Length: 341
Image (tube, rainbow, N blue to C red; front, side):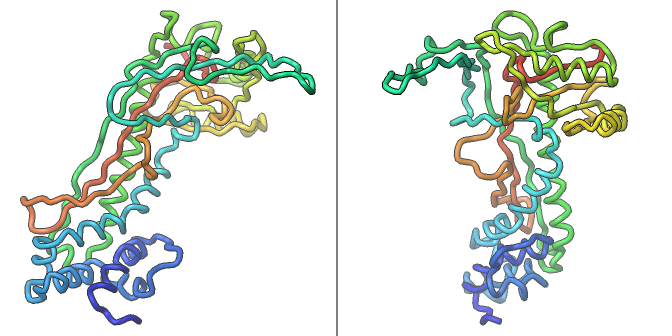
């Protein structure tokens, strides 16, 4: 065990907090195992010692230093993102779009011809230039695409730190991860159900193209799978997309899983209470063609960020989990809606 000087404790604190919350930490700080038994009070004592006010341990650590909030935020970062990922089932069938900032932007959805010419050994290759839309067909312009920030403060009282109520902290942090994932899912399912108008002044989901009125059944699912294969590319060829995700309303989950299992289909089922009764969707693999996408801010590694923040209304510490979220439908290809409107 290392000497418990403030510098050692501060260095080990994020690993100790994560371990106390049940996270596996690769190559933890050597002191982390010992601190994990009392990570909050140990961190507070070290912050106070660093501020050279050991007699007023917990209070001094919060009012004279940002260390406690910064290190606590670092310790809970992976916990909240793990819970976010577990709850964010909708991300299975979504692509991802990166935005540079929070300003609304227009994003073109481009279709490049799949009719490639034969090139002889000494022939020159033709070129398509990025940034020159005349070279390709713009199928859709996603208008007013923007991110919004969602979050809430978590206030941790002085007494909770003294008592090392790490279980209470874990519960609050985990619930925030779930809540942020549900918020992103709400944005996505709302966008799907709005059925927005595209550049050609028709809705995303059209009867006879990517919309089926029938209830979910083996017959309607077969029709959707065939429809997915026969979407047309710019050159008029069959896109040959594979149906990989069946997304259904809550009451259809058992039926959907039964259909997929009995037919031995390579399709993943996702159910959501946010969809209206009897609604179902079929999506292609987003690696093959992403019909819808969630948004992220450029440079962000994690979906959820945890930040320290001063809250003078409490005698304790506050952290602020937040996420920059958004969702869009990119076009008609790769998505099919089923069930009566």
